Length: 213
Image 1: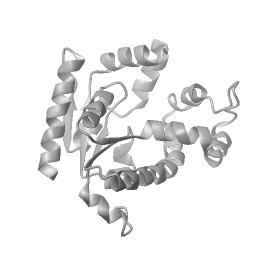
Image 2: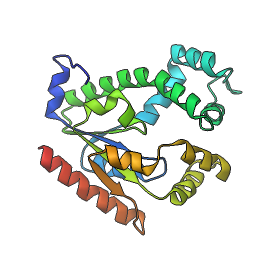
Image 3: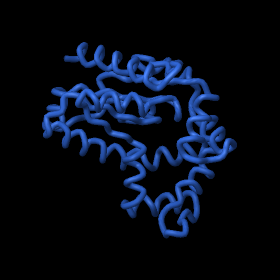
Image 4: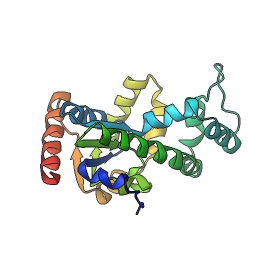
């Protein structure tokens, strides 16, 4: 359990939901519906990418652990890093351990920022939510799931990567059973359209915010 400061205890005024699940399952749609309700979203992938751009100590630690990672623009080449860790579970765990602390620190800053803005709902999106201290910040956790084939197709279309690389990313992640058995609620993306799934996500968000309110 994370010990909170006096100021952080004021976060109890907010409903803080943690959403997780494998890549390509539909978490982005869930987050958009939260924003439509007036909530704030903390995308831990975006937080990580932001830190990867500007946090020199993080950059140095990653290169010390995984070797030269600079691309042609002198920035960390995320695809090069992904090619190393997504094919080796041990190295993926190393990456998670390195980034966990810096991401947690930034998420805490954002939560305090949203509290000051008067936000009543914040959703934290993190693939590794259940294995990190971020879980202790959440009043409820939700797993968004979809079949591996659907997820591979979505990742390829979204990021313009090869099928082999997409499958490597999918296989590197925890199985659906892990997310389902460790989250408070499950949201299965088995809908025929994005609009149908958005409505399903909205209904769950309404239910959870009313229960916490």
